[in-house]
Image (tube, rainbow, N blue to C red; front, side, top):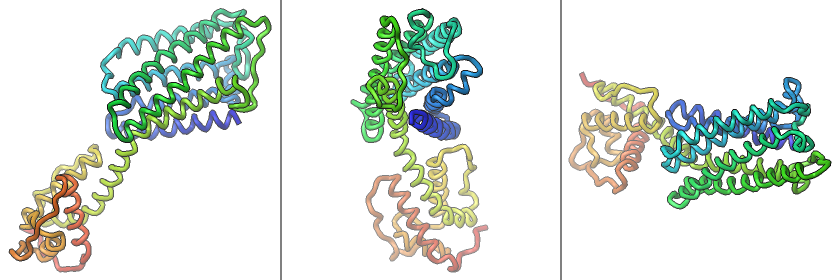
Length: 358
């Protein structure tokens, strides 16, 4: 059950991170978010019990170290991403990176300085009293995550207060995830103090993520926190994805009309930029079609049906075909008009068309 939870959340984060990385490669933005999601996913996969059993064959408790390092890198990436979203990425940029590097070095150093680490699942409960290096390990890990989560929470609150729509909902979920993460970190410090104070600490074994309060704090809460962070950072991208889908459908409808006008008036064709975004390609196509319509004598005063008929006839409009266009916002009106003309133009593909202009 616990392995399924860790692998499920981890693979979801990795999958979304890969998708974000592919999108960042096209748009040139969002690489930090992609790294964060992938690191979070790997952290959960490294921490799964079955994965730790395999990793410990290379070095005792190696899975615990790898998952903690990945978690810290993910926390850093999320703090940078949220700072960029909130428009404060320039603040404390160098400090943020230095704190991460110092924490990673200290964490790895204290881990490898500890002798007698357990194999299999990395549970250190019984070793804290006799290994101060492990106390340093847990304190550094917890303090760094607390520092990163606090920064994420502060920026998220500011963004929620000023944002709207999906942006506000997404950052709100990120803030709730930070609150859950704080509960997890608090429970981690409490467990450390309890294990150090106890004469004979016993490692807790969890049958499920929420089988007990200790298990919920150690397993369930971090999984919920990561899930909320992943969803929260993904929600703001939904409007852009919907817009990209609409733009793609518009380009599909406009393509036959653009092809016809490009054949008649080759000079309207722009240089294609395969690296451009979908919206940029749509704008280029609209510009080419608008120029072609003007050269064909088809003005914006015509209804879509009259404009399509004029194109099929290869003649300019007559005075009786003029009609007032509906009042809409500029871009939406252009898209609506051109798509309507394209539909009318495709309605009779076998109709006689004029020869290309020479």
